[in-house]
Length: 194
Image (cartoon, rainbow, N blue to C red; front, top):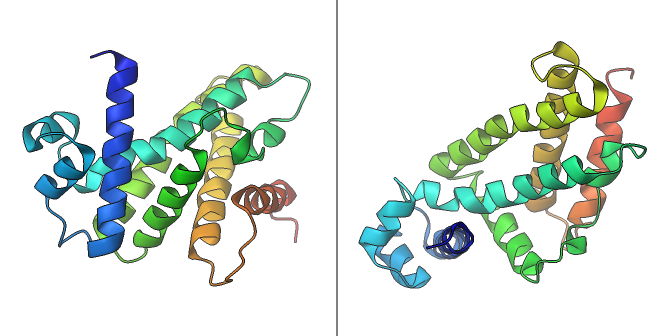
């Protein structure tokens, strides 16, 4: 299989796992059910992941990888915050709406499912060095220097909290994810001055 096909399979497994977890809960969902829903064998499922909770990781990394790639390609004369806060629908991927719905379902589950919460937090933890690297490339610092690491942590935290706020909100007509991210980044930019 090509890497692109493997990535598509991982993403499909993640989408189906989230759908089943949202319907039944993590404990009541079997690996065999996830495999069947994704159109693969259970043996193949285990080639892609080591636990049913980790099945969802590609959905989370897909979104963060997109943001990192966008940041890397963003014009140097424009602030990185503009790249990060851009509309999710600006992606060329036609599955953006489906993924947004699956992401919302998944982040909702992180409130009550400790295994999924651990995956959510680990994915964000793993993204910080990549954010720091992009920031360092643009600022002339090394990726392990204090400034890009702190800025990466602020960015990462703002993104994580924005998605949680968007997913966990009780408003029947919530604001868009893009708008929530814009607000979170504005708060992060204002720092601790208040």
